[in-house]
Image (cartoon, rainbow, N blue to C red):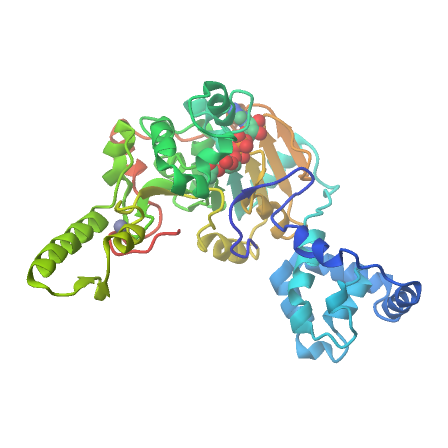
Amino acid sequence: MSDGTALHELSAGETYQIDSDEYDSDDQGDNIGEKDYDELVAEAENGFTDEEVAVLTAELREKGLVNFLRDYLVPVSGPGQTLRKLLLGLGVIPPVHLRSSTTPDIQLLSFTKIVLSRLLRRRTKLPAYNSVDDAVSLLRHAKNIIVLSGAGISTSCGIPDFRSANGLYAQIQEDGEYDLSDPQEMFDIRYFREQPEVFYSFAKQIYPSNFVPSPCHRWIKLLEDRGKLLRNYTQNIDTLETLAGVQNVLQCHGSFATASCLRCRRRVPGTDIEGEIMRQEVPKCSVCRAEREAARAYEKSASAKGKPKVKGGMIWGDEEEEENEWGGGEPGIMKPDITFFGQALDSKFDECLFKDREKVDLLVIIGTSLKVAPVSEVCTHIPHSIPQIFINLTPVAHVQPDICLLGDADTIVTYLSDRLGWSIPPPPSASAKNQLTMTPPGEVEFASGVGPL
Ligand code: OAD
Ligand code: ZN
């Protein structure tokens, strides 16, 4: 599970979110003397046998981190079933400050979670599933499919993906129009806080408007209509799954359907800031603005009458203090509720994944480079025995799906449907378009709700 980890791109060699520095740094200068080492090896050998370790590892891959640890640590397992024993059995020596044989489990827990997460990321391809025929058969029999989708399912709608040679990041780089050292800064929360005008000079280009769902979006709807879709985890912010009529979709990276004030966190329908997006202006929070004006008005009348200044129930001081509080005298900046790098995903992502891993019987990954965590972790956080089909234009090296169908995703899902005798539903009527596009899939509290920031 993402454990609240912020959205981030995987670095080379990394396949999910755990930052290895988190514990590697503990080991700096941590040379183990030969005697200590021998003692630890002896302790490991007196612990679990190789067969027991293999069983525990298989259990971890099936149950997932949380369930595995819960079951491993239940008192029923008896005394001695400690995290230290587990770690040594796995061939992992705890860092020096956790190495004493008296270190309690509670102190070893975070370190153990990191170790187990690393183990989890190594999924082994299932030898039973390889061919297109296997894919057809899996789709025919599956009842609870997770579809994990990315920008590649919307390219045929005219929306560029991010990382292809003609993708958004390459375009931003080529344009050279924006003051960015890395095109990904366009979606970086720290950068946004400093220079929101850069994002708003660009946002218009990715604002969902007048796009028609692709065969892929409609294929996901087809799976749902046939009662086979457990959930669609989409990384896309274009809301085209919703427009295609898919009900059970989780927009993992949010969408333009709502926007929130960075200062007071008030959430509004995304259409409230549509005008500013189209005019390439930075939208400001009307409530913050009104509050500020009221405070100023009060201050004026108070100083005229010699009363103390009051804001939000607090007595406040000079102009400089006010400027800081209001972020340089500005009311709050509105930001569409799309998840930026450095922001945590909505907790719904972890909740859904935790629940869905118990039911899923097939994972279909479509149109994503799987470069961004924690969504990329879906592949390794569902039981490893669940078959995985990967449909994409380009291969990815860091995951081991069972069946790779490389090519244009629309063509591939259409072919699969033909083989199954299913027909992909037609695009929604134009009148459905606007109404649906900006309707958030879940219940969202407007105005007084707290956004995901
Ligand atoms: P990427 O651009 O990283 O990957 C899209 C993948 O789709 C690539 O591997 C392409 O080869 C493939 N692709 C493109 N067109 C295709 C087609 N017609 N048929 C099949 N495959 C095709 O996009 P994502 O993986 O979705 O986050 O990116 C993940 C996240 O990174 C995004 O949600 C976005 C980005 O930074 C935010 O902006 C918050
Ligand atoms: Zn506000």
